[in-house]
Every structure is written in structure tokens, then in C-alpha cells.
Amino acid sequence: MTLIQFFLRVSKRSLVLPVLCGVLSGAASAGLISLINSLLERSVPATAATALRFVGIGLVALVARVASQLFLNNLQQEMLQKMRMQLAHQIISTPLRRLEEFGGHRLLAVLTDDVNTISNSLLCIPHILINSAILVGCLLYLAWLSPTVLLGLLAFMAVGFVSYRLPMSRALKYIRASRDKQDGLYKLFEAIIHGIKELKLHPGRREAFLDKNLTGLTSELRRLNVLGFSLFSAASSWGMFLFFAFIGLMLFVLPNYGEQGGAGLLVSYTLTVLYLQQPLDALMTNIPFLSRGQVALRKVEQLSGLVEGLSESARALPAPRASFTRLELRGVTHSYHREREDSSFTLGPISLTLEKGELVFLVGGNGSGKTTLAKLVTGLYSPESGEVRLDGVPITVDNREEHRQCFSTVFSDYYLFDSLLGLAPAGLVPRARQYLERLHLNHKVQLGDDGSLSTTELSQGQRKRLALLTAWLEDRPIYVFDEWGADQDPIFKTVFYEELLPEMKRAGKTVLVISHDDRYFHVADRLLHLDSGKLRPQTEPAPAGARQLAS
Image (cartoon, rainbow, N blue to C red; front, side):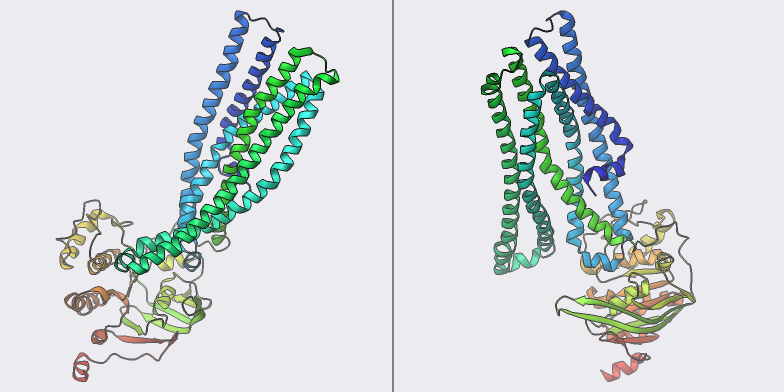
């Protein structure tokens, strides 16, 4: 898809006014040059009426140009908002696995650089329209003055266009390569943000990162951009040289071939062609920006392609289910690539049943597939084979979003929002404040009447407690906790395992806990052991007393 097609698809009606104003401004500018030539040739008298005509045409050109720019500025911001919202919806509608494979750094590059580049390229349109109208008007005026001069100019323009396209195509390759490298730059920026402690503590690592990784990539980006824009500049300069060559031919060759009209007409030719230099230069100056916008649009289309045919249902959903009876996994499998080991890992086939009111622990070594299984259970991942059933109903793309509303989760890589988003704060704030006190967070975090949290800048253990509070308030029938106790002190581990989890069970909630804390396994109704993606036979947890004797 070209940029023009994209703009027409997004805001076809909104483009009409700036386009018309741009064409009107260009036509008025071409009219001015015609009037100026007529005044210079003395074919039009310099009367007050002519002066008023000159002022009127000039005002039309000015007002139309300003109006075109104002309309387009408003359209640019409107389109920028639409693009951002559309991309946000697309990302949320994309299956989680596809997003993880695409990479967060690429998403960030599209949402920041590419969206802004496309919207900025929209601002080139009034300049292109205005200068195109000037170009057409001046060419028509030249045709009226002398068809011979027009044919000569068109021949030179054809040579200029062909010779301009060759370096342009090469420059565009460099711009595309530069944009591909930009994804890697965002990945390095992510490394700086998330790895700042490690970089500060290890000078050798810091210097290697800056000198090898960052310097190498930024140098390559600089090289590609310099080559691309140098070719753009060279092609533009070559076009201007051809213009002056044509003017030289008019001045030194045309009179020798007996072109009628004398010196006055030659002045009109020269003045008109000189005036054409400005719109042509403007057109060639805007082409690099349009080229960058076209490259950015292709990146946005790649992101849009992630959801093509895979978009998850975004229809209006019923209220979350208050209860369920049975959740079943029947022969479920899921495969993914392990980058560190450069191998493929397959989870399953897994057959598992979770009943209402059960407290189940999922245990196993690192990399055994526990978190992946939790994502399959919650509907964040789709099984490659087998099926998930909720109360006997198979979970498909049509009802997967409804299925997810059965779960409240705190994954190990959870995100903590700064307010109780999606929850009605009016009825929950008093209860939430009680939970804050119970979790020993009331002295750190204050909860506003609108559900806003005064801060999320807490220790890792405190942040997990705040995430637990949010999950608690959601009041879903199934809870999933992924290594929640890993960052808690012994006191809060005991509170979580021996008070909070049994309390959820008594409330009729089903709780799936991923844990390595074997001293609390006795709390569970069942233990599920994962070993290299396979589920071992289920076992009953040992009583607390037996565990203490064994230890």
C-alpha cells in the first residue's frame, strides 16, 4: 500500500479541503507569474485595477496556502491519534505468543518512530499539491508562450526524472536498511533501561556494551542514513543543474534559431523557468520524507499482519462468571523455541482437571513448562493440539476472551498499574483499604477515592503484595499465582500460604499456585509435578507434621 492510498483510506473526506486549498494556492501562484510577465512585457498596463488584481491573486494564494496547512495540521493530529489507537487495539487483539515472538523492542519502534514518521509525511502533502499546481500552471503558461520551449523543457525534465530515479532507488534501499537496524537500537535501549544496575556495577560489561554493541550499531545507522540522504541530495542537486543548463540553452541557443518574440519574450521564458525551480526543488526536497514514510508504513503493515486471520474476539462481553464447576485440559500440547539452547521445547500432551474450590500446587524444575501451562489454562496461549473445556464447553477463538474472565493472576513478570483499572472504585475502596492494612502496605500506599494508588515505587515483595490486592479485588472464580512467595520475607510467606490461600479456598475459589516452597506443600489439596514438559502422576501432599519429621 502506498502512503497516498493509506491516507485516503484513513481520512478520505478530511483530505478534500486541504487538497482543494493546496491546488487553489498553486494555481494562484501560477497566475501571479503570468501577471508579472505580462507587466514586464507591457502587454498589461500598470493601472490601479491591475494592482488590485495582483493583490487579490496574491491574497488568494496566501490564504489558500495557510488554510491548507491549518487543515492538514488538524488532520495530522487526528490521524496520529487514530493510528495510535488502532495499533493499540491491534496489539491487544494479537495472540500473546505472536507478540512475544515479534519482540517488545519492535513494537516500541513501530508505536513511536514509525507512527510519527507516517504522520509527519502527511505534512508534505500540501507542499506537494501547491508546488504541483504551480508546476502545471507554469507549464501551461509556457505552452501558451512557446510550444518549442515547452517541448525542450519537458525533454530536460524527462532526462532529469530518469537520472533522478536511479540514485533514488539506491537511497531508498539504504533508508530501508537503516529502519531495520532501528529495531536493534530499541533493543539496546531496553537493555540500558532494564540492565542499568548491572551496567553500573560492572565497568567491563558497561564498556563492552557501549563500545561494541551500541557504538557499532549507531555507527552503522549513521553510515546508512548518510549514504541515503547524500544520494537524495545529489539527485536533487543534479536536477537543479539540469534546470540551469536549460536556461543556458534558452539564453545562448534559442535566439540563434529565430524564436519569435524578441528579448521581451525571452525574459518571460527565463523568468517562468526560473520560477519553476522553486516548486521543483520543493518537490524533490519532500520526496525523502515521503520515502521514509513509505518505509515506516511497511513496518506498520508488518505489525498489522500479526493479527490478520488471528485477531481475537473484541466483541462486547458479558460480566465475568461468578462461578464454574470444572476446567479440563484434554491432550493439550504447546511448542516454542528456546533461544539459549537453540532447540524446540514441547509441553504435553497434558490432561488435567481442576475442580471448583481446589487448592492445587504446580511444581517442577526451572524450564519444565510451569508458566507455559498456566498460560494455557488461563487462555493466554492457544493449544496446538488437544482442547480446553470449561464446564464441558470447548474453548475456541470465539469464547476464549470470555474464558479469560474466569481468572485473576499474578505472574512472575506481572505489571502493576497505578490505579484499580477496570474495577468500580466506589464499592471497592473501603475493602481495598482493609486489604492494604492486612498486607502491611497502608503505611506505604494510600488509595484515593477514585481508585488511584499514591505510589507503586516499592520493593519487589511489596509490589507483589499490591498485585495480589488487585487480583483479590477482581473476585474471579479461579486464581493463578506464579512464584508469588519468591520475593516475600518468611512472615509473609506464612501469611500467604497458611492464611490467604486457605481463605480463598473456603470462599469457593479454585487456586493454582506455581511454587518451589516445599515446606508449604501440605496446604495443597493436590500436587502437580511437571518434568521436561510432561505431567507426572498426581500425588497427595504430605502432612505438615510428616514433613517436619522428615526434615
